Length: 257
Image (cartoon, rainbow, N blue to C red; front, side, top):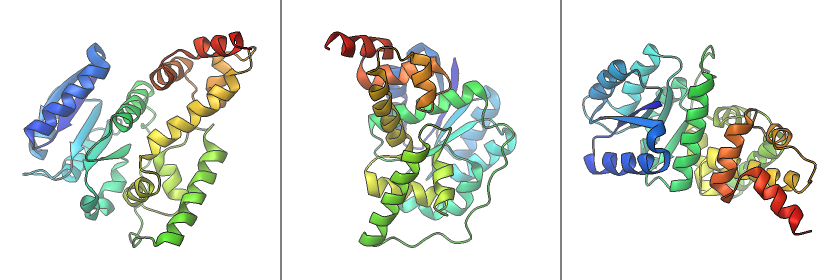
């Protein structure tokens, strides 16, 4: 059972997001809600939440301030921000918190599910523990023009192509390009109309499909080759994207030959 903190001062948005999470993850999650940053901290301390989804613009304490407090209490809590483009003025403080991702309102279904699956994986293995937060960039970059954005997009694609089989994150890609996490998130969304986690998941599953065309390929080996060390987690993600298990996909492809 994953304990999730959902903090948003808009009750309708909070209820809608909770409903979406419950619809997809059901009995595997329990959701505790908070209406502002101060309430979020109190709920986190009481429920010992493993995953915190925080809106940024909230009364009392904003989401970044609440996340700073939560991070001081726990190095392992997986933090996800809900935000809009104009909230990136908070970025210099936000990036040292080691947020998993920034879900931009309105949050699309594919993005929500991809980020939540990754958050659950991190909650399971505790891979946030013992990592030192990296220092923020001294300055955020100004908006890129068209040519510069195309060049950055090409570099991002090259990075993903060369590294999708490894344990990479949005933070790794941002550091490679010398961007702050929050600015990179904004730029990636502008370039690809989806967030990094969602795009990386699609690349990995696409490569997995190619590898599974080989009837002798084991699901475990394919899982490792596309960056998933846990084959059960890989199977769950593969089924969500394709509607079938990797073994079913492999057998179906070979039956058509």
